[in-house]
Length: 321
Figure 1 (cartoon, helix red, strand yellow):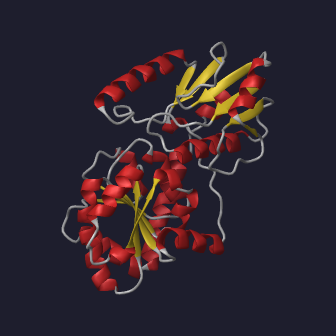
Figure 2 (cartoon, rainbow, N blue to C red):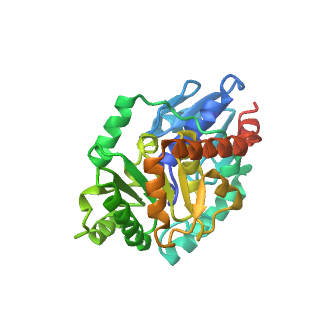
């Protein structure tokens, strides 16, 4: 039995999220299956653990043709020639907004429904195994800080363009109080959004402490190297990223004015980001009180462990052969 896992992002799913989900799946199997696991990718963003073979698309398609017994695991883009094989769909997409533009999104929704209908089983975030997270040396974290913020410690922010100015006003209050090096890193969905964000901060007093990067350039180590993570909006695929943050001991701040599932609010501190000096006071508190920061990190660990305690669906469903 061969299991082909196609690590290719569909719609608006960040490539790192797909690749790391593949890593989590492979790591969860260990020796519990006798199947040959083949990860299909022409460019892989993560380190694949033992238990699977990494293979390019063309080579994998040729191998599939010679396979009498196989199944396909994919994220919206099945392997070519796999129509007659059992297919499992790992659905990590936002349910209402697959792509930008209403016409393109309508077409994407139709395609999404077709894929769901063809799949023998469909899995989503609550079915995923526990994140398989690497441990980094201090020197590796230092290099990540150098790449992201010229070496400064940083708050890592996931927010919309409309929220950046408000968050920076709170960051200014913190910087006036701190008067030393601390940066803020905004993660944007693509280069277009990042350029718009950069335009917003022209002339900002603390511009040298403000940095941006896109999902395309995002790495797991960016979470590990951060000081605090800030989540101003909710998107379904943020679920896994928040789990990464919790698993790496990164404190989590959530905006209570967005539609977070109730269970997620236990991962850290949840409050109204628009409250005057609410965010800046939290910046100060986490900066000056290491014990408080560590306590909130423990909240994230406990939340992740609780969420993962009964998750075995993918392991038992796909790799049960």
